[in-house]
Length: 288
Image (cartoon, rainbow, N blue to C red; front, side, top):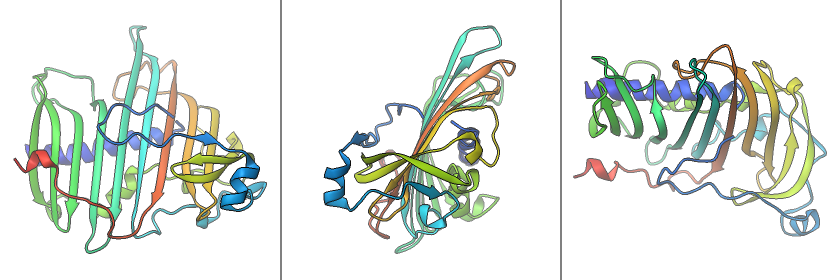
């Protein structure tokens, strides 16, 4: 059953990422992870003197140079998601989550996938066989996968469990490909030109230029777009943050009334790192 819960966690995190792809920015939950760096506006002149001139007035969103994933051998990213709406009984409802992923290929392929937020999957239930995951901390080193999960089974109080298994025992695509599937794939979501609306914005330790997207920039537009932006780092010329807010009808595991609009907000941060520099290790709770 532990092995099955690992697989379920990976699948459910993927489903949450699909909700992000609908068009969706949220304050991070208290995950124990470092808070994302703040976004600070810096004057264009001051920023340009240290980090070069402002970026072009518009960018081509189909330019592959804007996207460091999956071309880079090592990277990390995190996504916060918030959905607010009404349930079928007319009560206010909210879902929040935080997901982070780290990948490097040296000295071997190592991956770290972390999720924490409101219960993943259907609403907590005491039905036989129900599994609700509140957090999942999974590390893949070579052919070994170790996962620490806070899980409620059959509506009981959540318990921490650890499980280690060969990655080859998990059916489906390769684990590296699975990790990429968790990421909101902005490159496939958008097209056309985006106009610069602000210069010299400090994001994730980079001086960036901020570009605004419209509904016409989205290949498939489900629901109503409220706002969307990308932040392009002057050092490297890649998108280091994508954020958007939208409204759409959804039930999201039966949590929301599918006949009413729910608000979705996401922020995804991308970090380029030196291959082999990440400290990816087995969750400490699994070493006890």
